[in-house]
Length: 215
Image (cartoon, rainbow, N blue to C red; front, side, top):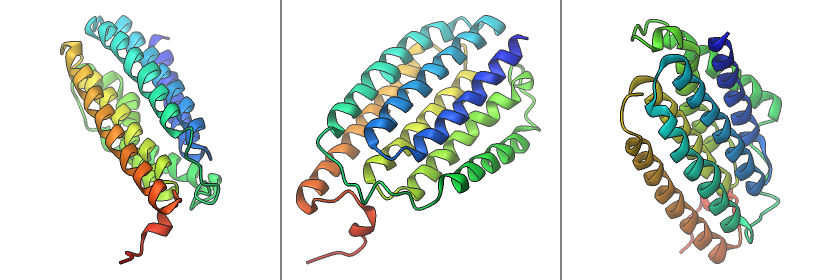
């Protein structure tokens, strides 16, 4: 039953990733990312309880502060004055994106099947979800015309790396999780600064408008 709860939470992670990708507005995606991060924290707690991985309790606290409160609030605040309705159109229909997310998840599950590490052997579905997040993040980057939405592709990848680390190095101190998240926050800040400069200079967030260099 406990593994069923863990697997269901992992499944919800995939669903929230899908909604992050298809969200039209960057601010909406920021709140959806916060929701996904909250699900990730519940997953940390469930794994910690089931497998006596007590370090994950500390990971959950630091992840709540950074992923649920700090980073989404920062994104929402910085995105408030930047909007480009043309750029909010996705390159692919949501149905096609849903199919691609499903295919990515299925392939990831078959890729992790041979893995035989102690805790992971009973949580292969969760490991598959963590691996799938790297490619779902990449899907977000390549299918979105809005450069603000592309930032969330990186955020999804970071959540995937946090889950992978929780499964493979769950006895590591929570400072490792903090370090990874802080690096991600600074990377996101740099990307947003670049986006603000582009928006101020060209008045567009559409990546298609940035393909031609102008002298």
